[in-house]
Length: 70
Image (cartoon, rainbow, N blue to C red):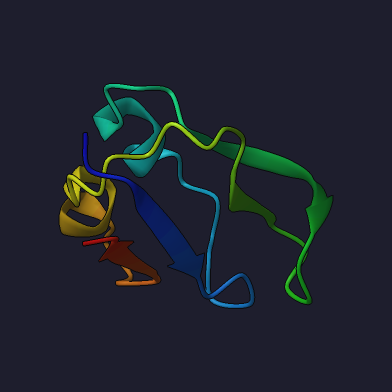
């Protein structure tokens, strides 16, 4: 099974949550911490990511990069 990881630009993330509903494996969620703009930002909450890129595709601000292990 493929494994993926996310790199999230936490300072640009507005915490809109669109990506959370796009993640079929419930890998991501909002942090309890806030960024410099006062938003709860996205973070990985499990290591079950398969690198499907659904979250990155729907992100309106393009703050998510997905990497897939070979």
